Image (cartoon, rainbow, N blue to C red; front, top):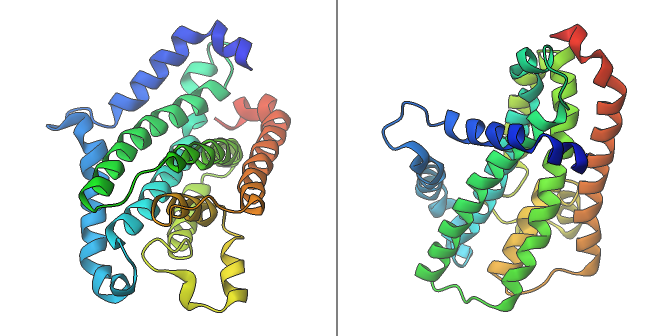
Length: 255
């Protein structure tokens, strides 16, 4: 795969540029919306939920920012990845290029947005008095796991979307449900221990929780937590690769 990406490097770079700039085409603020959008969402959530959930959570804005940032990245990456093959069917139906490059370009474009907003998160940490330490370097681990997880989910969703257009509407409902069970604006500490363990069945919550552990608690999660985070990423990536490989030669029949 890496050899093919290197071979079609120019095409891949152009796809990433196109995907990143297309979202802000004919807008006044352009790419600044990649920062303003999440900040406006954060402002609304802070206004609504602070009085209900934020009184007992220290640095609640940062707590909320971590959850909203990672969930938004997950949703953007997987939603755009889901339609990547269908949106570019006019290209690969005429030119023999690796189809997964269109999905990768969507993921890289979303990752660029995510990276920009992480810098904004660090700025908020400075303003809110959150102490920085070397442990912040460990944030690379959940980011890498989430990138792999999103890529795997994108492979699965893009194949399913080509065959069933209903996937887009079903996925919108699914992500709405997922947002509420990812503890973005509330803490799971109020629940019994058995219920708290159930939250770990949600991969997005695991990555959000890892971020909060490092940034807010100044602690590196247990080794078992690392295994869970990597396990979800590897399972999604492996499952996506298997589905993509089996359905790859049938994609042209569904466009």
